[in-house]
Figure 1 (cartoon, rainbow, N blue to C red):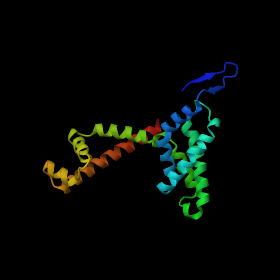
Figure 2: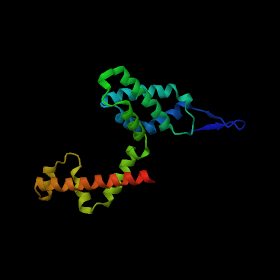
Figure 3: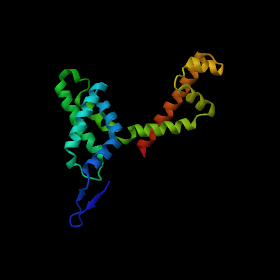
Figure 4: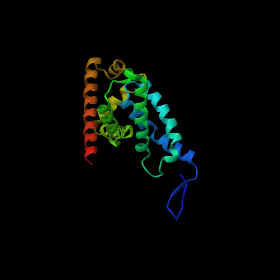
Length: 186
């Protein structure tokens, strides 16, 4: 991102606002999508509002201050777009009251809920599993692999393997939740 600084008043000039916007937007797209999905009850609604938000972000990009938190700025606009969408939809969109929507908006905007953080926590937790459990999980989620097929491959019953996989998943979920709680305390 190239920008020039005017030494007299330290205002940042954008040499290429389109490139800057595209870089920031593409870097934050998934988080913004996740954020809207927490605010709206249906995935289709979130997708519609994401499209509207994208247009508004581009139109208002000249108000964004380079070097500040783009995601926080985008969340403010996305939240307003979600509220406008709810107003247009009327009762059909009112699954959450405004107070709950505000709470969800604040929590969803926090870094601890970013998909990248969850994936990082999952990788960490997978690494803490025994080698045997890691191999079971990896084999189970190979393309085309079912519990019955895997059970047959390793000489176990599908029921026994399902219980083992359930135990491993619970262990991973508990580990991820502990990591998320620890991250909020930092």
